[in-house]
Amino acid sequence: MSKTLNLTLKIWRQKGPEDRGRLETYRAENISTEMSFLEMLDIINEQLTLEGKEPVAFDHDCREGICGTCGTMVNGYAHGPEKGTTLCQLHMRHFDDGDTIVIEPWRSRAFKVIKDLVVDRSAFDQIIQQGGYISVHTGSAPDGNAIPVPKEMADMAMDAAACIGCGACVAACPNGSAMLFVGAKISQFALLPQGRPEAARRAIKMVRKMDQLGFGNCSNAAECEAQCPKEISITNIARMNREFMKAELASNVK
Image (cartoon, rainbow, N blue to C red; front, side):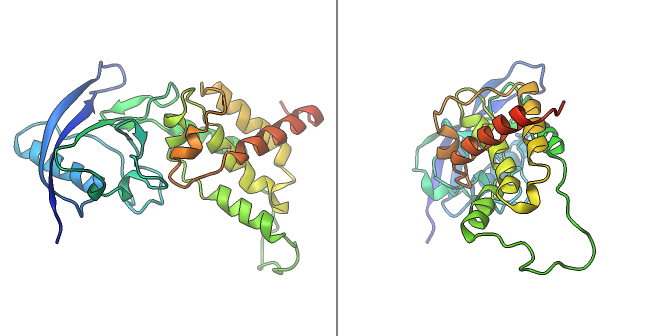
C-alpha cells in the first residue's frame, strides 16, 4: 500500500531569459510515494491551473530515461539525489514526509533559462553538428566479420554512446564544463574503426565549438561523472584530450 507525503516545494520561477527569477514556495499535499517526480510536478500544475495561476514550465518527453529532455537541480543535485537516475525516473518514495525540496533549472552560461525550469540546450546540438558523419558504404548489409572489433572496444564505445545529452554534467560541474558530453560523443566513434577516418577533424571541430559556446574547462572535480544519470566515465574526457592533441599536432583543420 502506497504512502502519501506532504511537502514544501521551493520552485524557481522566471518569465523569460531577460527577467529576474525567484524561488516561490508551494505546498504539495497527499503526494503518493509511487509517483514519479514529474508526476508530482504535474499535480502541482493542475492545482495552479485550477487556481487561475501560471503553471510551472519544465522539460519532459519520453519519461523513460531515454530522451535526455528532462532535468533540474533537486536540492542541489542534477536529476536529484539518486545515483544513475534521470529526473523522470526519480520517484517520490526517495523523499520523506515534511521534506522541503528546492527545484532549480540547470545553471550554466551556455544554457540560458527560457522559462522557469526550461533551459536552452541547443548548444549541445551545435556541438553534435560539428562532429559531422562517418564514412560508410551504403547498400546491402556488410558482412558482420568484415571489420573485426575487439569486444572491449565495442563495450567502451557502447558505454560512451549511452550519453543522452541531458546536460546534467554541465549543471553539476563547478566550471560549467561540457567535456564529459563532448568526450562521450567523440569516444563513441573514435573507439570503432568506422569512426577513425574523420576522427581528427571531428575532435578539433567539436572541441573548438564547445569552447566557442562558452562552456568552462575541466578541473577534475568529477561531479559530472557522479551525477550523470547514465554514469558516463570521465575516462572519456581523457580520450577526448588525447584525440584533440593528436589531431592538433598532425592536422591543418581550420
